[in-house]
Image 1 (spheres, helix red, strand yellow):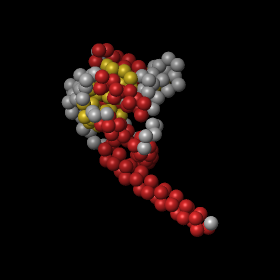
Image 2 (cartoon, helix red, strand yellow):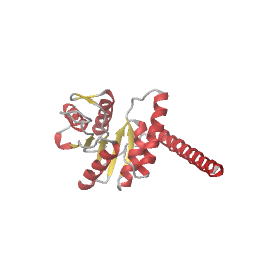
Image 3 (cartoon, one colour):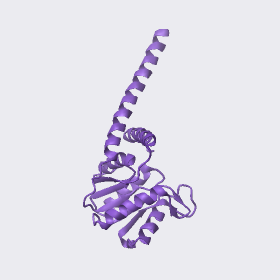
Image 4 (tube, one colour):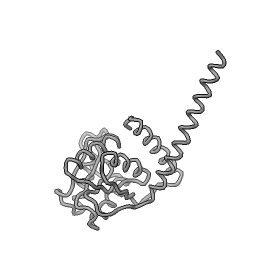
Length: 197
């Protein structure tokens, strides 16, 4: 009995060690991708949602939208898609707030596509990917925080799209960035395992 318990315990430790190594390796890939701006001509710019406050974008969302405005102004794409659901808000969605912000900065409404149902990254990307596919588009510039780009790129590539990452310029402090790399690595591994987070 002791031998079986010892073997089971050893198997659990080995599995945890392997998982830790995989998470660190993926986190390193995420970190490398996080500082690479691949922006180039594409069919659409996809802006990942972030918090909004009663119809106003949070500083993070505003920085993402401003970066998308810069790419749009450089004529790298003729359309921008905003994403993100309500997050518990009764009136506003992240996608809708993003649309209003872009319009207030001169982007015509017909150039903006909104995905406003997704409550998680996986949901938003699945919905956005379906919208992009139905529009007959093939290439996307993803705008988000650097730590987010790797996972989102892989999700969209899985849907058959050509994807270029373009992280927003403002960055978090190094300790927070490291935590975000590990968190995104875990999320990526769960997504690969079929668990949507």
